[in-house]
Image 1 (cartoon, one colour):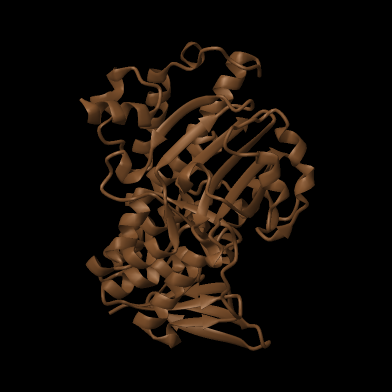
Image 2: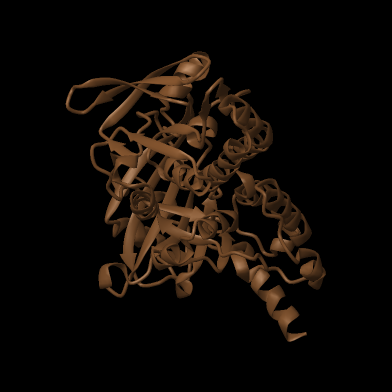
Amino acid sequence: MHDIAIIGAGPGGLVTALRLYQQGIRATVYETVPELKPLGVGVDIKTVGTKELEELGLLEEFRAVSVEAVDSIFYNHFGQEIYAEKCGVHMGYLHEQRFVHRGILQMLLFRTVLERLGHDAVVLGARAVRYEQDADGVELDIEHRDGRTQRVRHDAVIAADGIKSAVRRQMHPDLADPEFSGITMWRGTTLREPIRGGHTILHLGDPRISTMIVYPIAENFENTGLDLINWVVETSGEETIEDWNQIADPEEIIPAFETLKLPFLDVQQLIRDAREVYLFPLTRHFPLDTWVDGRVVLLGDAAHAMYPRGGNGITQAMLDARVLSEKLAELDDPAAAFSAFEAQRLEIVNRITDDMRGEGYEVIRRMVAERTGGEPFDDIEEVLPLAEADEIFSRYHALVGAPRPGLDAVAATGFRTWSDRTQEVSAG
């Protein structure tokens, strides 16, 4: 049985530990921070991610701390609807799409690791700084928060240590430093009444000016009777440090949404009422041609850091975890297992990463803005025909491993939105 070290107790590392446990493989997780806390804001877990959590036996616990997605609606900078589609089982998938606070999901996974693997399976306050390997194993240099240094030995190492991965830097020193995209991402949460019934993700604005994504991540938050709403804004900005937890002033971005008028939501007030606001420089991490160095492998953001668009980061890390654990169970040689994992995952994930840099399906809002010269439109069908939009979304969903079910059956109805089309099909 392999003895595996996992570097990083983020969602990717913790899911990997649980997947290895299912295969009867022992893992020890090394995490830099001395105490895990539910930090961060919202994440969008797509249907394939929900499937992974169900296979881990965590579906009901996940449902209890998350919000189901029903509708995904796109608007221009004037609040005019561009496109809409159903989400998860409401589109015909076998699994739900759900919204959740990243930190709450991480804590669910952390508790499960401790319950199943034992409390000694996670070593907190232990930063892995470099590795050395020979034909039989890998030695990790660990720096502890109390100043101690330690060298530990394992059969193999899985580096799930995020966008600032020390292992990635050692493995690919010439590709370790990302490039600033020129875009600043603002992330906040606001406590308020449910928006459109409480199960909708909104995609708002003209990407040439600013864009905003809005969705709920907790219902009846802390027994207030209100939803905790997650929102993300992208604007042009100056480069700052690559740190998810930089505190920001929301007043700087409120003017960018003066023209955006929605009958069910005051976007400027949503920003103004934020409980917390963070900014993050959107950076380009270069795709790698290999994630493997012998008995050491990269996973999740350490392997394929992608723009946080489209809900792919954590979901793709979950898929990494399953495939990698299966390969380690099949093959006695960890290096061979890592190479087999890479052969199955690298090409497709690099394509997803490239697509996210090109805005993914969010590109439709840019297309509309450019075709209208940034002005309101009279008829969206004359600007972005439904068939063209459907093709963009179908191509995207297939790319990330979740082809849209049932589209061909309703695409010919001529209705603009998925809710209209599914209602017509049901009535027929």
